[in-house]
Amino acid sequence: MLERTIDIPTRDGRTTTFIVHPQREGPHPLILFFMDAPAIREELRDMARRIASVGYYVMLPNLYYRRGVMELGDLPPLPEDQARARMFDLMGSIDIPMVMSDTEGLIAFADTDPAAKPGPAGAIGYCMSGQYAINAAARFPRIACAASL
Image (tube, rainbow, N blue to C red; front, side):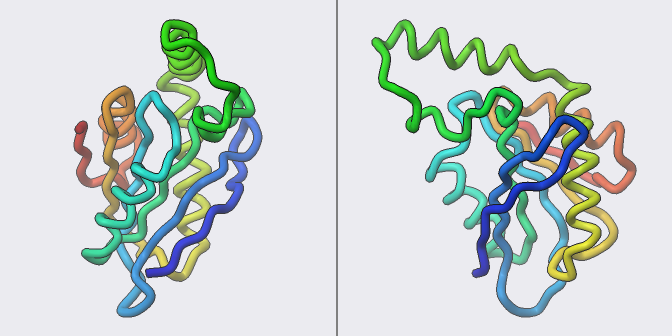
């Protein structure tokens, strides 16, 4: 498996994105994997790795980049109720139009990467991001299937 974390240009800045795909037998079909409310963390990277291990080019973008947050675990610890309020504040800082704009940038980047196969792609939304996966399939003809987990 090959993996990297890079900043991908979007209309509103740059989203730090974890990309993973098999080393051989490419190019591989694109899967956009949208994070859940607790943000990027090793658990999500492991999920992306599992998906990639069966032959996909998986992109896991940081949807909270506009707020300068990569991982909630990197933020100063707070009492549980305050940490939960912070997470809900971050969730409320993004919406469908913003994430669809980011999706344009992600797809544009994938189109330039020889490891990503042109043609039909998929989108997976984990918890809060189910709506983003479904909306990506509705908006972008390239997204041929979507799942909300």
